[in-house]
Length: 307
Image (cartoon, rainbow, N blue to C red):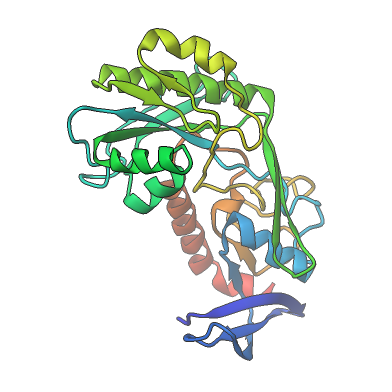
């Protein structure tokens, strides 16, 4: 295994794939040299952001035109509760509780779920609302803050990854009405959870201060809050879907074994193969798909190599 390598292109030469790229100097992170690897089987595992970039730069596996499309994120925001007692969000077991009651509650495949989330000091500094003196006061209150995150399972929002002029990922994303409404519902539920746990004040991550002194204020203030671009802080650690799996080569990039429909011996094994947004943290799903695909490849390696 090698570190500080970046693959730039994959070429198909008969039954052999040729991967070219550069090696970075570990100290300076400047280009040190280039490299070439030739192999009958190549696995791309660069996430839903960079796997499509590598395929697009290589002009491979895209007869469907789907490479880079169908990007989902599990749109995420948070609600903060201010408590009289010490909460210290950086302690304890992270993400040790979740609520999935509101997933597919309306039968449309969408919705949201809640997770208890750790608040480490650096993350708190980035996420806590306010500027200048207001933000300083929030950081002073840090030990007394507890957080709940809301994650939306998208049904009408999606994005796309393309390649910019520097050969890097360029990401676009459109948030639409139903997912936006689910986010607002999730913020309301999370705020009520914080009050039920004993919070004296609850706040969202809207740019314009949105605070609740009691549960009775939640609905009215959330209805008035702007959820548009740059009006509320949103996050994600779950990019999915840009090289999606499917049985039909016309509408998907890889088959059920994560092998490209177009190029035998070329696999994509990461979160990019998800055909739709998941209703769960994707880690275990990605690990399971990787294990299944690796087992299939081990059992069919000679067949794949010679195809």
